[in-house]
Each structure stands twice: as C-alpha cells, then as structure tokens.
Image 1: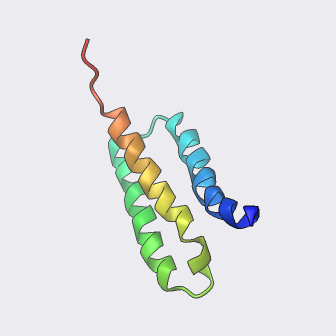
Image 2 (image 1 turned 30 degrees about the horizontal axis):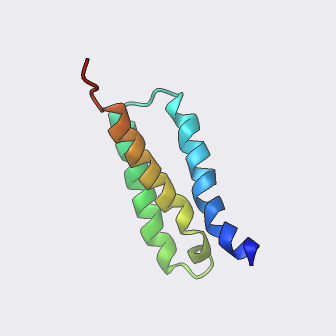
Length: 79
C-alpha cells in the first residue's frame, strides 16, 4: 500500500532534482521555454504510447517545475 502511494512521488522528485541542477547552469529564458515545450510535447506523445504511458509524470513534471523556475527567476522583489 505504501509503495503505491509513493510511486507518483518519484515521478515528481526525479525531474525536480534535474531541474534544480539545471538552475545552477544559468539557462536563458529561451532555454527554459524550450525545456517547458519539450516536456509538454513529450507528455502528449507518451500519453498515447502503450509502454511509456506509465512514465507520463516525468516530462509533465519537468514542464511544471521548469515553468515555476521561470516565473521565480523573473520575479522582481521590491526593495
């Protein structure tokens, strides 16, 4: 039962660590946008693939976390 509950956690944790690693690479805004688009395209392809359907959370998490990082990096703090 616990293993079932943690399965989706790995699908978010692994891309989160990968995107966190890319944060230190100081990517441009266009590179982040490309990463988001690639994640969305891979998600749509993987949904219809019979074997890859089980791993669809990986590219969608990359797109989501990449979008969050793009917003955070462009956030202007007052002061």
